[in-house]
Length: 295
Image (cartoon, rainbow, N blue to C red; front, side):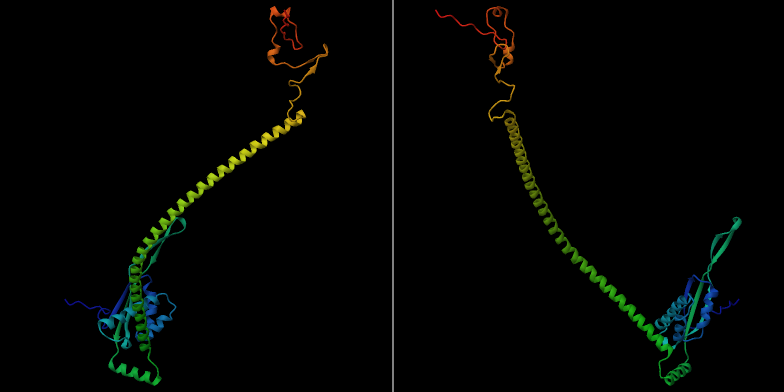
């Protein structure tokens, strides 16, 4: 039993497939209908100025197909056109949205597989296109698109080479910088230790000076207190060396008319019974020894 060959799989040319594109197949087909049968340059212009979001995915798939033709089949991009393009249904992602009365509505997030097939123009078609470009005195759309693509490829390769060179240079520079950084770190540690020692010495000197200043202030305060006490004593007695009134000052007795001095506490001791009858009593109440008669 012979098996039938699918129409899309049997198409001649170089192809590229973009799978699981997050857009419905119907939306992708609307863009694919614009570029079907167009040359590579014209198709690139249409996709570049299209307002559909899926046009970016279609343009990437077209560039991939042209790159495959140049690399695998060695066909220049100026001689290629879009011979076939189609979008197949992909898996659908099912989601749910809550609705009223406890119900839920299913949301279908559809995907598709986009296939681009590019083929080479025939010799007659290439001659006709070259003649038209010569009459218009300008380069064709295919030539411009191919030149633009080559420029993009060269820029991307140059940028990649520059990144690799910069990465290697940064790696070597980081190695040298790490070595220099270690030396600088050792010097910084030594300087920090020296600074800490100097700071401790300065703090010790300042502490000693503060202690000496406090001692001097205390001595001045003591001298000031002594001077104030002397001034108060002089002001109270009226003479620099006198004693204050009430202490050891001679007073006159109102009864005897004699001057009596204030006695110490020992003078206030009462006399004994033996000497109380014979010994005379002084003004302060103490007994005095009678004079001895001369022989």
